[in-house]
Amino acid sequence: MSRTLESVSRLRSRMGGGIVVLTAFDLVQQSRDGAGPFLQEANFYWVTGIDEPGWKCIITGDFFYLVSPEKDAVHQVFEGGMDTEEALRTSGADRVLSAEEGDALLKKLSLQHDAVFTLGEDPHAEHYNFTLNPAPRLLHEKLRGIFTRVEDCRLVLSKLRAIKTNEEIGLIRKAIAYTQSAFLSVRSGMANGTFSYEYEIEAQFIYEMRRQGVNGHAYEPIVAGATNALTLHYSQNSQPLPKDGLVLMDVGARVGGYAADITRTYPIGKPSERERAVHAAVEEAHYRIIALIKPGVSLREYQDMSDDIMKDALQGLGLLEDRSDTETYRKYFPHAISHGLGIDVHESLAGYESFRPGMVLTVEPGIYIPDEGIGVRIEDDILVTTEGNENLSRNLPAAL
Image 1 (cartoon, rainbow, N blue to C red):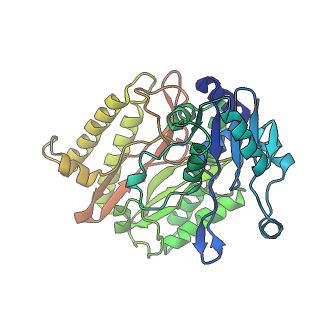
Image 2 (cartoon, rainbow, N blue to C red):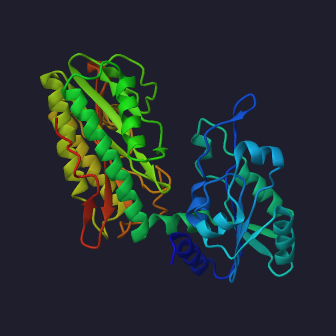
């Protein structure tokens, strides 16, 4: 069974015969008359494998339909697009419908079913500093005009996606392998004094990934020399590198729709003793925290134990006196220790109370000291196994 048909089968088993309708993202504007780079809505991609805008899918208890976007001849010439045969081959769907046929099918299904399931409102939207892609909202509004009830299946999809299949894990392994290869090339160049600017390192990452046939980065790469590492999502990658110091690099390839997410902080020239001490503290905490991960460990317990380990690191560096001083603790370690990883770089673990085999998550301790201009983070991608865990990115050295 293909990956997408397995996804559809797992979704059907959870929906009890209910109708699920999902949409691809739409293209969004980048310039006056040009669209920005396209990245597919993760749930739609998980179900269909379709990596183009405008498509929709309708899943019933018996049939799996794709609905093709309406595209006039002019846009077809300029942009191309997936044809029916390729869409069927990619998705495993039973049939491709036109937009008109898709609307007619939904109206017919509404005579037999009061409710339809689709993505509801993103629960974290209020924390974003960007405008959401309009496609899921527009589909939700359309379905409200056809069905009596429109129900949210976001949590169901998140729970299914949180437990990876062997094929999904294989794709993540490939993304990690390509990322590790690029990191090793960059580290060699840093040791040989090849780079003078952050953008030169970024260019080397891009070259190595494209040379290996990787389509692109899973997210905007971070190459942060010296004090730039204090900005967690620094992405300008435009400044001179320090003559002697540290460079934080957070980079991940995407393969078959699945992401890697790896961070290393490597030396350039001769780092100071203090920089070495901070790096050593993060590295020790990193491996102690990874060792906590195994099936049955509650996520709450994991968070508490990780906090204790990070407080040990900060106390060892003389940065924290009172372990109950949350404000100071968060000053030096301001982000989460882990997040899920898959099609989305920051993927939900879907409200599970404890680790389960098949979960993939990051472990990324960091210590950031604004007064000293030092920022260090180490991040690996971890698979929860039946016996414990496997560090999927373990072959990339973390030590200075």
